[in-house]
Image (cartoon, rainbow, N blue to C red; front, side):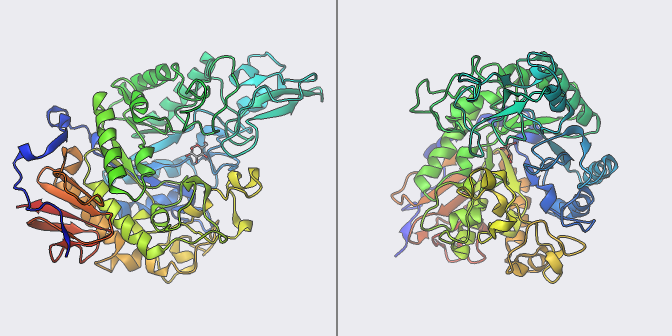
Length: 574
Ligand code: GLC
């Protein structure tokens, strides 16, 4: 006997709902408050030139497929000139396109084509660090200690009798010390420079006004080329606490609670907000609504909300949501606290399930035996995810997410139901995390595998030559875009239908209320306008209330008035 979602189903006078969020009704309907932004990882999107690495012309060619998804904007991970030690997050020239991706003319063609489809182009700004090949860092290496050139970065003398020990105990995100010692121009062992990531990614010194000037120039360069805004990489780390004190917490600083001081000295320092305020003024001086979105791993949510106060960034990623476990109570808690935290500062909440740094949600949700850290990847020696379970849950979770008011981020390939490549041979791994930890952490290559476009073509149509910088799993033909386009029950068609309906029903601009409490802790049920979105995260079937079935995460979901585990539906309430 299915348990009942609302027994007896309550009629729906507003009073029976628990209002959580209704502040937007009165507010301007700015596009970014309800936007769907699709993340493109350029090297894995589409390769038109045949070298096995995706390129800008490939993105331009793929835009019609994204227009079919009805997205508002694409965010491009870095395509700037770079030695590619961290897949482009090590920038050697912020105002040049790396030849592996194309040219500035290719970028202009891309933005023009995107505009024809009504799609904005957001680029990735990497202000915390650059590449060690950047001209400014090369100049710093050639200049003496204490010189203005060195002051662009964070150079310090080492500790110990001969300066042979790093200046403090900070660890790199990718493993090992966050400091590297240089050889001075005269050949002697010299100062150390800080790199919160790879040693090829020196951190800028944001206490230096010259660094501010440099980035304002970069912002204007891309704004002048018509970009719709910036996703700001590591937006929580720009300013470091003065004196650079030792830190007892984790390298990623994301769980600072429980450590002395409760604050990581390299994250979330007050001075950061002045930087964002000055950038916001620059963006606001341009026409159109150009936006800033922070990649900030800051907790708790109330503190993160400081990144999106009215005169700072427009959006910030909601990583608490990305990391939600398969548990209705926990998911409900995160949704509610997100809406409350961002609403308090007048900002929209965003929702995201995957990106280029974490195991894709199809694979995460398919891990029945548990997996420690999504950023650390999965390999052949790990317990393997159950693909079909993961896919069912991923489809259900996507439908639930798209019913939420606010902005949504999609990561390329999730509309195809792609899992991680979980059996990638170590020889192919390129993520510095893998190499800096001697393979202890596998890293993020598994979620960065090139997309399948055509079932029957070499490299599934990713590249014109069949080359692919990372090998694709051998069983992806059924996941290819052309195969799915022809299948009404495919994940691709579910995304298209849900995104179309989300826009038509203005769910992104909507309000949220919880369906009255019931005794099934495995079910999450929310009301946005006259749409009831229900997801069954429990172990047994659930009776749905009366209503018109608008969409189900599975072609049969909700058809008999019953919602089975690992599925979700949208109902229009009777
Ligand atoms: C961000 C990026 C990640 C990169 C890191 C260093 O977290 O998303 O891919 O490795 O910053 O730039």
